[in-house]
Amino acid sequence: MRSAVVVLAVWSAGMLALACGGGGRAAPSGGGAKASIRASAVEMEADDFYFEPETLEARVGEAVTLTVKNEGGAVHTFTIDELNVDQTLRPGDEVTVTLTPARAGSFTFYCRFHRARGMEGTMDVAGG
Image 1: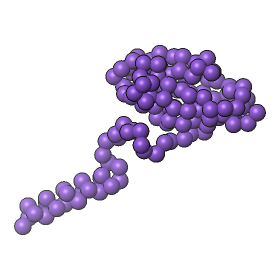
Image 2: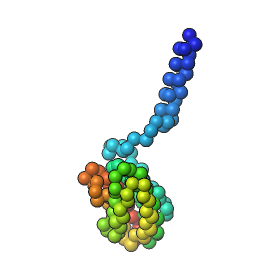
Image 3: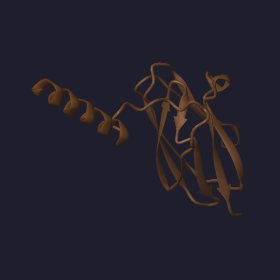
Image 4: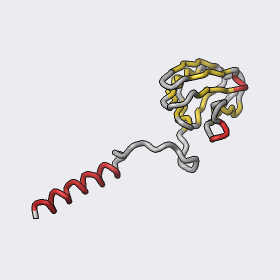
């Protein structure tokens, strides 16, 4: 009887951990909810093969500082053609980019090496 109680307690703790997000973080599958962040300083994760968050919000004329960390095992880039940003990050690298959008619009950021695998996101710039 005692072993059944121990098994039940361990199972219950495991189920509670899963329900509370105690499991590992899975890479986005492309169909999940997209995180959107608006802040003057944003930390971004570049991993194999996605960015987190996938959507950023900014305003015309306001500086945004992005710190991009490559937490994956492959070399990635953080590229925004319209804003002249193109940074290469080796595994474990971190780069900080400060930009001030001069016009409103929706700008795609992506990894030049893995865009075909869905490694991209959007910076939506309002105002102007």
